[in-house]
Image 1 (cartoon, rainbow, N blue to C red):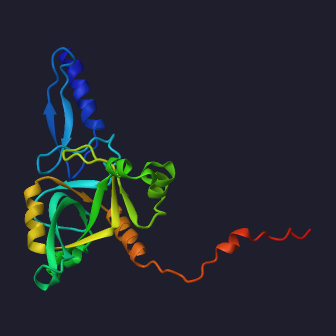
Image 2: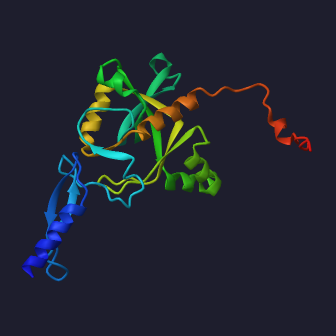
Image 3: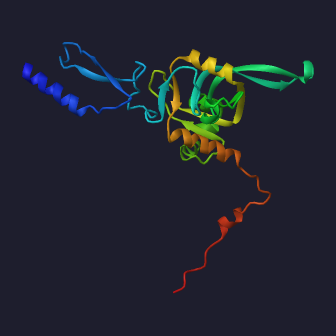
Length: 234
């Protein structure tokens, strides 16, 4: 029996893929199931790696600390907005909101201290959106999110953490600027959080750029849809 267990352990070591960014721990199963140790991947900071059953297991990495990068998902943080108020000094007052946001500012600008404020976009979980509008409940809307044809929105996949994250939608219509120091302090307080990895980080940046570069044409060419080509020459 001992020789058999050693052979099984040797086979497990050969078949579990190695990674420079992962280490392993060994969890002993109960005697009622098996005496063979099970190898469980863990992240460099000691936290567990997302289940491969998670749709976002290839999209994110789990990070912590104050450092910010483009594609960082910041949940349940405060973001102020200036709103017009004729009764307030200067005609404006600050409305403090709390929600989920993604960092849109370029990583290189953040790393080189070129920014005083961080650009954030609003994130809503899909179920909340589906509860509020009939359009979000439609398959056509979900298909547009998957294909990226609705330029105002960007789809974020779920993630089986910790931290857990449900299917969500970035809304480029709702943008916020928040002081860099305030944003980094809040990011650090979150502990473990999600960050988009390449090429999904760049996919987000491209989608935001495409949204910002839209041009409203005074005359479109929709009539071309009704043009019927002439028969092929025989």
